[in-house]
Image (cartoon, rainbow, N blue to C red; front, side, top):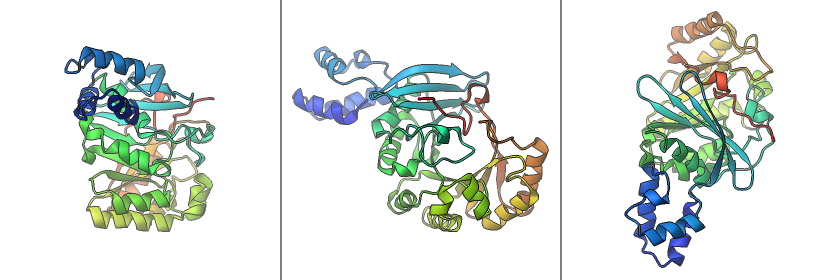
Length: 326
């Protein structure tokens, strides 16, 4: 729902300011349409249905994995494709993977989204409408800005959407924003955000030359500078940064790579999520044995590390697999 358009329309209708709050309360609780908002006069519900689309996004396709993960392809009103994912876990977590851009301009070589033509930044309403789509399906309680796009290239709209997620049942402490290290947005996040929103950093190689091969953004914003900014976040927020590290066979999964990663981090500031590679065509994923050897090096260095559970791989909904042909 375009919240700015909603407010303008209500003002033009001569409605009191609290009407916008009423509409948002119904919407954030999972109402399926304006007709369900029974505290609004029927004439107003009809007028809103005619003038303010209930969602800024159109559902194109939806697929469900054998593990319960759901991936939805949306299109914006001007035709840009966007994908988002609902991940279901046995412990009751219902986590959303939200996109902040249509495509991504940063071309990380292991990520399918980087092969797409970049469309544009999404508005806060378009980001929220991804979450609201799944909220209408069932209650949700976690969110990660880890879908299409680099969130800190769209920092204002991302933060505006994140600040509304608690109304859907997703607290700030259960919201994570992931970055490849786009420093202007990262600095603003560290300096300006006082909500306890979590930070994740996509690192993927501790050797600067190797990281630049995998992630060209490293040439512009070197790893050492990004890690220093992450440590500043930890000092100010007293919360660890999640480090994402996708394991590519023969590329970044050796003992030497693990030793370099351990040397770059410290246990008080970082927790590592090791991510089995989800095939996108260019690399092979590391074997289970290689992943465990890598983790053992981090364990010996007392760097907290876990191996991420892969969800939705069979429907191309897993980490790094979101991509849509234009």
